[in-house]
Length: 148
Image (cartoon, rainbow, N blue to C red; front, side, top):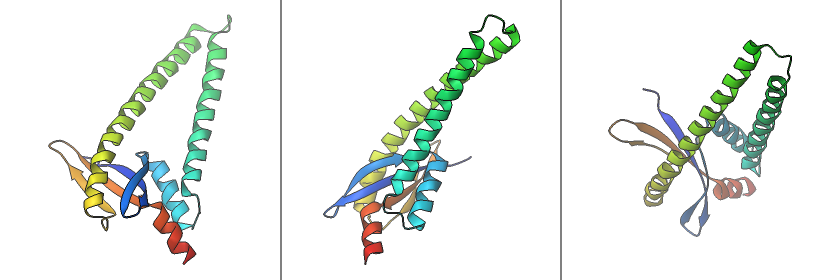
């Protein structure tokens, strides 16, 4: 069974951790880790830029497919493949929404666990049929350590 990962990006209000953002995409988590290792002052910026680029590329390709299948001289086979791409894209978007909702629920519980044990930066939450690795990234502390 493959275990998913949920990353909590937190800042501290005094000693209380506050959730800034939740990541569940492995590529986004890797970008965040690389930015933190590189000493980036705004590690989430790279994640947001990559996410925006992916959205733009998806929209651009979607526009191309829409244009292509709307042409009157396009073969039915090509039109059929284009429609299948749109259906697939809708299923992927539904999956991403469901994943984001699940990650938000997991993040809420994981934040409670982290609040009780703030020295734990990685732990596993397990249920009857699933396990999730949780990684916690306290941004302010990383920035303060760099300044020191």
